[in-house]
Image (cartoon, rainbow, N blue to C red):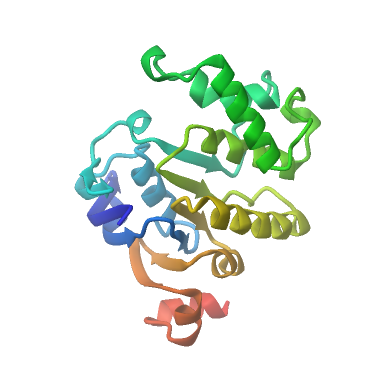
Length: 239
């Protein structure tokens, strides 16, 4: 397994945002965390990435316990809904950022960084845009820059938090297809948070449906459609 989560609990005050959750994600799998607002899916994602530390439970990457490991040591790629690009940096410098800030002992050479950035620009269909600034790009292009920056560090796992939520319907649909093709090419273990069931069912190999801090059901899109395990899953997918 690429990721093992055992009995994870994260509270804010007395409120358990994630409540005794267990989940496994296989190497190279695309997993979606699906649920309404407040179901705990983003808190679970942030706990996986080390942005929130749980009070209880265990997280393992490739068998290694990383429950209390700082986020910077987890080699996780993050992509957020709001892109989080640096406006004063060019596209190329945004993509290279995670490499530029590595400790000197593990930082690639300038030539290696430049080659990696050029390769990612080509893979993301952003050829010729490296010298532009984020304000000069479309929303879909900015999101691809954010994905390129996450991939530049060669992460062990890619975490996507509502990555298409700020885009219009047509761009969102086009990027969905592009992201699935990219995943099939890279075979990178990916976990995506979404409240959009069409998005989750179209993209993911498996979907974990969350409600009130717990996982109601984990299964393939076909499993969820044909045999919802609880009334909540049935009602949520029918809405």
